[in-house]
Length: 153
Image (cartoon, rainbow, N blue to C red; front, side, top):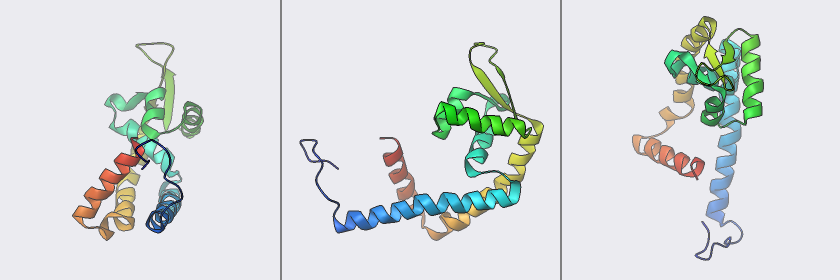
């Protein structure tokens, strides 16, 4: 938080420092562990699985590239490169939007859809084991609220 005048409050308190180090460890260790599981199970990275899952949940398994970038918290450039890699593997296809020929749409292929169906239970089991099984219902609610507060600001 900032002071009432909007100025930074100074160095982190010991409690804030402990929390900050825990957040850093979480944000470094958890994605790496989830990546390793998905690589072993399906030769995809976590960020690739996230994009494939967004497409699987979309009507017609298709979304505009700009929507994929926004939903996955990636830059448009990184999204283009990532979807290009998935396209080379036959997991998605790209084509101009029917509504607006200037926009590009990514669509999950049958191969991509099969991979999402195969990996979804693996990913859910991994997330449950690494996070949710270690927390109470109240902690899960608090974690969700804290994560939303931080990411939506």
